[in-house]
Length: 110
Image (cartoon, rainbow, N blue to C red):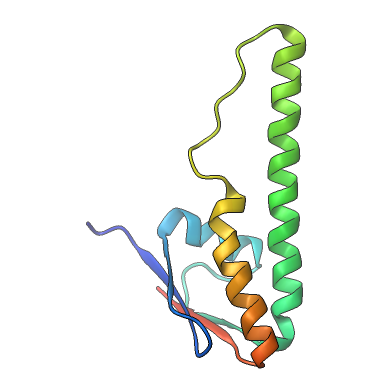
């Protein structure tokens, strides 16, 4: 297929492949241009991890609120897309942590 892939690479870990919608969302969370290759230096990894964790917490809070509202109204519970943001970003957070420890950058291309 002509689905765009994002390939995150580092010298410390294997490559991490993300499909276009996930990769684009992650780069937007990180304040990076989704249409261009990029880099996160080891020194910037903690801020990147915090941004990803904050986005996950916000998504989970929104979903929890939607569930509670539906229950309160006696409506069927909303269904959320199959894979949560948390599941999507865990491998990247792990990669960033390992790169930070090793003093290496994470780079990606499209």
